[in-house]
Length: 294
Image (tube, rainbow, N blue to C red; front, top):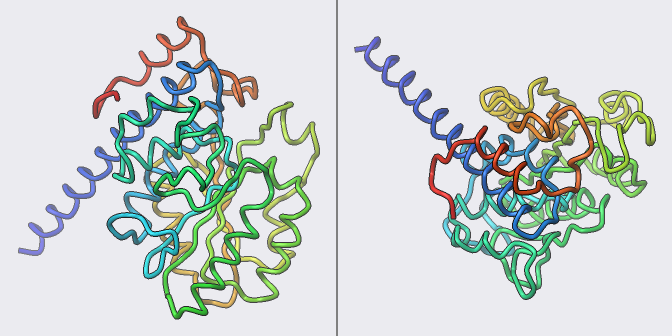
């Protein structure tokens, strides 16, 4: 009986991973098609964070049906680096927050899917306007404190970019979080080493981000392959296990900008540039349709 149970568990794990891989591929297709249609947007970082958001929303977060802005009695997520809205919108739609066909309105006038997420359009899943970089961590800390005041034991998740850490407000928030023992917060840094004008080490070298967070009193985990679904899942589960220990948690997610599209990888050029018709065909050929295009 024991062997049968183990075999069943292994099969179930493989099935779930296959499903998440298929979803990730479809999310990549969504990203590419969205930015191509309007000839604008940010595909590079979006592609690099596809696996992370797929795992977070489908395997890690405790989510309720529907959407309530307060997020009481459930985990909540804030996207601080809002320019990677294509991946955020795709994952939200593909996990049931709004119709998938609405992705076709990305960046159009009067659309709920603006280039940088905002709240006044009332798009389910969006809790913060995040066009201006460096502010998300402050908001996430406030939400984490609100959960404590409301006796809500659920967690707050945040994603921010590594180039975004060059904004000073982050470091005030990083200092505050440890001083106030914000231990129901998991802040993930997309560590791809690139930003709009080049490599982060060339634009404004930050040294060891791990050592900086540790110096500010945070527990820090590193996910060496931030584009591997299994590695991301393991890393985030470890991060969850560390919550409640009087220290905020930082996950350094080492990703590849433009992951999944060969000509978009190993360069910062696709931070904020859309593919042309020929490039779209090439990119989509590397990411076959799995769950159906919108």
